[in-house]
Image (cartoon, rainbow, N blue to C red; front, side, top):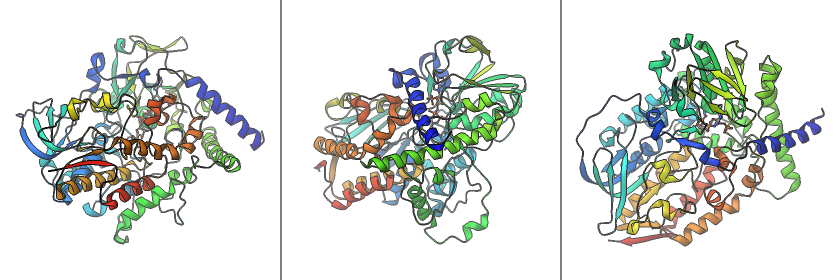
Length: 588
Ligand code: NAP
């Protein structure tokens, strides 16, 4: 086939693959880890903790002690605000890196770029793509270095957070009976804090062993993040999900499982990883400020800014060098962008052909959608694992698993008997914020967030919300995003800490968004959303496009479509304006 014909055929195939997967229930197809599934949410890593409830007044309560919460606390402390409480469900710092300990888990962004504050802590990542234990260790190091441990309440969840109009305070209660009365409430729960299960009929009936990848059960599998899982040698293991997590876990499961069945709904694009050690001497040669420069350079390189020098120069920067979602009305440019995108994805598809021995398996592993539809994966052992005789790809042709029985997973009427079923089914990313938080903040006059946001989020920059004074949200909703998520979190943390500090020093008692400013901000987001909207129509459903559901509520749930550095410019200009434009303030 000529390249032109292949391009046209690919476009038709993209549309067909999308059509196959679109379903009306969108996010509702997934099931929470509650009720029958509550046990799957249990923390397998923490020692039981007993402590007495506390009751205190504090300047800031931060919900979450992952990178978002930690960076916010660090920025606040830098500004002299030290009366801070961090409330965290996990047993330590780390957030997603506390929970995700599955074998093979590693950072998919270069660690010298991904890990924050490297020059401040003096830490030198050891591998180009650091493993999860190294990153979790770094989170603990940050906790010690910035003296965050005394502020943290671990293994604690928020029960309720209500604004007290008379006292100008948030009253926050927890599942351990704490009462925290706080001037400010920062919601820094992250985007991967709430695991989800596929709503497959019968999953609750499965009588074998089962767990979600973010609660890996090493007691069952044996081994560890780096050690072989020897207990699987006589086990038939099933894994559902082939996103970034599945891609990392499968090669490790393939090493020891007697049989491994990988149930696939949509294949991921998987490029070369080329991981390796970082020469410690490299750090000695870096000038002051190298880290910030590298972080910015990476973000520019993966958002179509094409800096003169590509410092990281890895698969990410190669794949994302051109932004397929560029805003343009020029049909020739759109055609060129589509063509360049196609070529990148053809490269991914050729890689499958090169690496997979069996033709039918190779065909099933090829991704038929654009490079910006789902998170691109990079791994050197994932595809070759399917050449092993003990590894079986069960492709569901976009439909997903049909049902689960007491002993088996059923696809196309065929029963695949498994002893253990692992869910690599991801996290709730675009469901309602109160559902993801696990509590429903109540603002002025007891107004619940779910009521105020019944038609979708209302925010200024994704941070301030009307009717919710002194509440600051760090989330991708109506805010920035980026391949390097921690870069975005750092910018958000700085903004939130600056605002809290400015309010404190200027005698401002409350700050919240003006409803008009929220609509104006939405207008800004929509004005840039054209490129994304154009592109998303050819994407298979997933977390990037709200599972393909197109309602006004889903539309309000968008992220800033351009580079997070451009998004950050809005925050900088707002801070520099000096009079909190678009915010309603009251003074003491
Ligand atoms: P995910 O990307 O949401 O993948 C979930 C998988 O489950 C998808 O393959 C999905 O298929 C599949 N699935 C859902 N319902 C199914 C059903 N009924 N039958 C069969 N398959 C079903 O979740 P994830 O892999 O955990 O990754 C989530 C995010 O975590 C990523 O986007 C990334 O940001 C982050 N992550 C990062 C790293 C890192 O290296 N830093 C590593 C892992 C994860 P569909 O595609 O068809 O929906």
